[in-house]
Image (cartoon, rainbow over all chains, first blue to last red; front, side):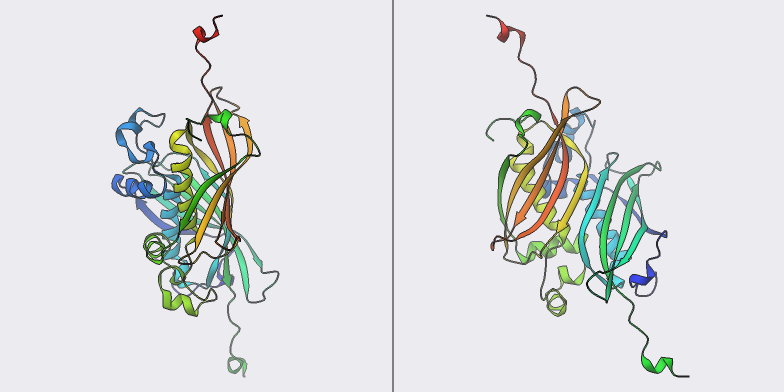
Length: 158
Length: 158
């Protein structure tokens, strides 16, 4: 999208590409040391001996990376007004150092606000796939967007 | 909990305290610059003019702080084996610089794994409340824990 996106611009059924991100071991460990310091996320040697057979990204880190991509690609140039919540997150496969995740956004639903005439809710699914084409994660989120302002009166003059 | 926690130790209905966290503006901005760079999360002046009337924490940051508390208070000294997903996140009220969030963990459900005899799933709700006693966020997550190992044979000798 090259112009500011309003509620009306998110067409149900559309899929948008959010680009890709390659995970480095350093960034995975830096996040996990603050927010999820389990050995499998911060200690390569311990992770090697775990069921996962090596270091994996904290699930919250994978979601935070996706959120960063969504914000930069879509939200910053939109009428986004925040989120009331997330309805589902599923971590389907581990994300490992060196993996490249491609993220796409599927517009699953749209409805006008029940209480405020100037906004609506978009239900969107963020899909992340690795370099082997395997889906590794999805997030189903509800975001509020302002409606497109009505045209000025003088544009209606004939 | 002062000893290693297994699946059997999470009693359905129990509530555990995970402590509290006071949010600084600097840490809120540092997270959001990487993962959620919307003006309301990174730019105090722009945030002042927004509907929120001032800077607020990215919802993902609030959840990441809770995850850090859960990991340090419970998971590190447990048989935790990862999470398959989150079923619900709701951001009920904004979190602002200087706010102190108290977090508790409610054990909502427990079931044995359908496919692996040595583990089970705990459904837990993370509740965050601010210094005014208002709930600001909750997360409903599913975590896998190993079952308590059976006693050694010689402990059964009479």
